Amino acid sequence: DIQMTQSPSTLSASVGDRVTITCRASQSIYTWLAWYQQKPGKAPKLLIYKASSLEGGVPSRFSASGSGTEFTLTISSLQPDDFATYYCQQYDGYPLTFGGGTKVEIK
Amino acid sequence: QVQLVQSGAEVKKPGASVKVSCKASGYSFSSFYIHWVRHVPGQGLEWLGIIHPTGGSTTYAQKFQDRVTMTRDTSTSTVYMQLRSLTSEDTGVYYCARIRPDYSNSFDPWGQGTLVTVSS
Image (cartoon, rainbow over all chains, first blue to last red; front, side, top):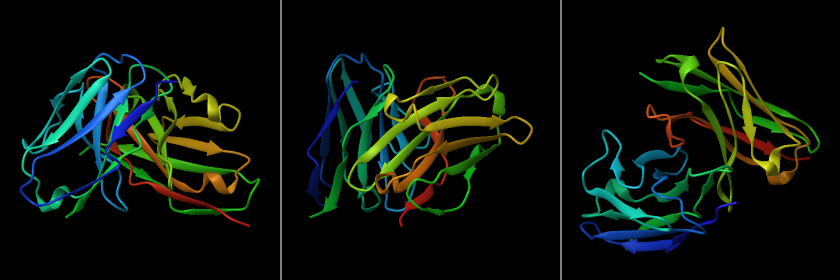
């Protein structure tokens, strides 16, 4: 199975901060990576697919990059609505696997 | 709009089975695979498997291979996920999710989730 490791597990930040989350795969997954945002009691929401493509309707302050085994999600200017948990997911092969999550908290 | 609506919360005893439904609307049901993912407290998101609504073909995560069955009813645009031999470690929220229109295995949209509680 492909292991996905996210860091940090928790991140404390203020409104307006630039925030970066890292996701590492245990083997190359090319660009078959998605990022999701999840808020308490809600289903995850797709933000990014194919490593760097912004899903429709997602604010442009979200961006992502990477290929192979190293990936990043960046929020350029953190907004109050962005405090949530973020997950990466690989879809290069079965079983599909997720990172452990990064909780973005208010500083 | 594209929507997946799941069945309501379930409480089950250890050893029992649960069957969760996921009704699709707003798109051609037969055209897109549907996945099942669960969120177990303290364990993040975990993929259970995938079903193709047309032929009913499935692929399951090896961890659940012996305990999970995914089926579909094309007449009602509904997919089902049954998990057997439940233990307390199966307590969590179970989601169905459709693949994106590019037919890659990223998920959008998701159902609202079904809480499954396993307790004696």
